Image (cartoon, rainbow, N blue to C red; front, top):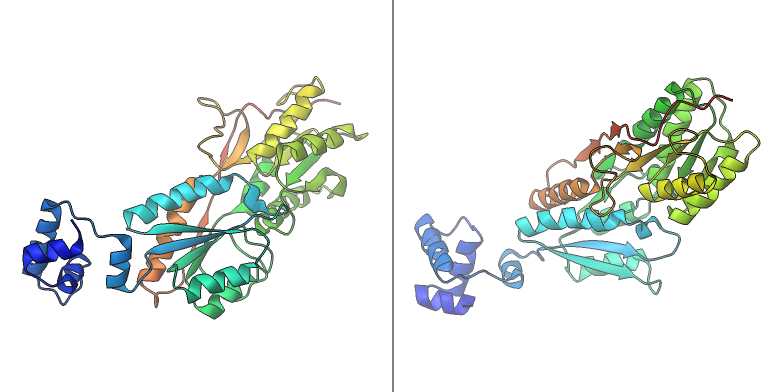
Length: 343
């Protein structure tokens, strides 16, 4: 049954029925109940397009995905974030639009197009960079947005949800220092990405607080692939004074580090300790009863749910103050860490 047929059965105009189903205050309570009862009886569900026409909204949220090779969007956490956000959108009657950037257009053009076509009511900004130009752009064109992460160097207020990356990596490094490690390496994401910058700062904070010098030869930054983790761990272990512990920015990097350690015939957790950040990915679980890796853990799927809720609330209440959410990561001790080996 469509809207026209439902309206004819009720003897009401399509406009009245649509407004009753969408909770408009000018429709009487008696009419609203009558329309909703009939809709349930006939299993009528208004289409997103029909709802949009009635409310003046697109009832869709945009996610612009850069596909450039040197971008953290290749990181697989994106899938779990989208799954979490999608649960929230579906619950509120919203759809999701993914705009893939193939290199033939720039991000500014994509965002301006979404706004001018009224294709979406808001967007989630992924993979924020240092001084990210997307934030002032979205503020300029008036498109509501929430940033998954933060962008250092942007002075104007904006809504964001982030993990306390600096604190998480300070805690991870402190933990290794407490175990007696002194040669601690860092495997990090691309340095221009804000999360990687904050994680490096946390790593350096811990070393400085204990009076240790910062050794650039024990720090590496690139796309977070298993191969990068493997290759750079081999280099850390090849030094005349090799690393006895490694802090990794992702489980993928940690898997590469483990491969390099095992290939050398030494034991992770006994000869070399590894701490990683664990996004609690649905397809890459860190053990079952006992974690394989000691990890700073924060669910990216839950971050997706909460970021979506923040954005929908901003769309519903455009004059409300902007909101920010800082999530703390939990340090989970697993099998990958132990006391520093004696020299």
